[in-house]
Image 1 (cartoon, helix red, strand yellow):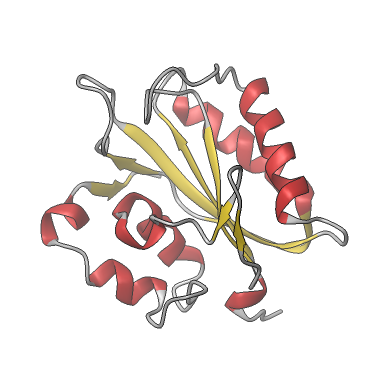
Image 2: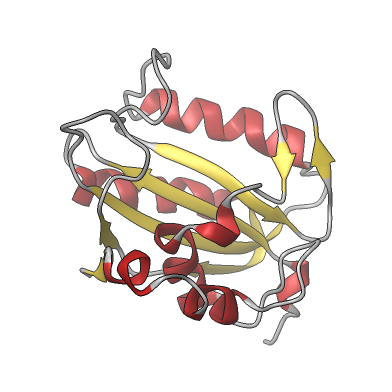
Amino acid sequence: MRIAPQNLVILALGSNLGDSRQILPAAMERLAGFAERIFLRSSIWETQPVDCPPGSPVFLNAAVGLVPRLRLTPESLLAQLKKIEARAGRKAKTCMNEPRTLDLDIITFQTELRNTPDLVVPHPRAHLRAFVLAPIAEIAPMLVLPGHTKTISELLRGLPPAEIASVKKLI
């Protein structure tokens, strides 16, 4: 079954504390429960920390794409993502971009737009980050983020070579 990329919800996953190789697949399994019929999952990528405190461990990152269950909204999904993060051992944030067991971000929610103190969709920095774009390019290379004109693949190719080199596919 083919689905237009703009009908997908795209979520980014990241982890750099605990057993990230187990945490990310387990989170993907939980996220599959939000899918109505389509569930796509990327490989796991190793990425260097970006804008993180000095000495932060490397991240493992991934992405999933899904057609959401009826009645799921960006706000209700965000509330569920926070619960999944907490179950994975994520603690309250003490500083920006600190190490964490699990980080789940809504990159897009179909063509929905949000700009509130709690939620900005599409994610405001996704188009600038290889660690977000590379996993998404695996599952939805032709996706165009709302407010943009280039596909995910084009955005990834347009990043500086050093940024692209900072991510590598693991599994």
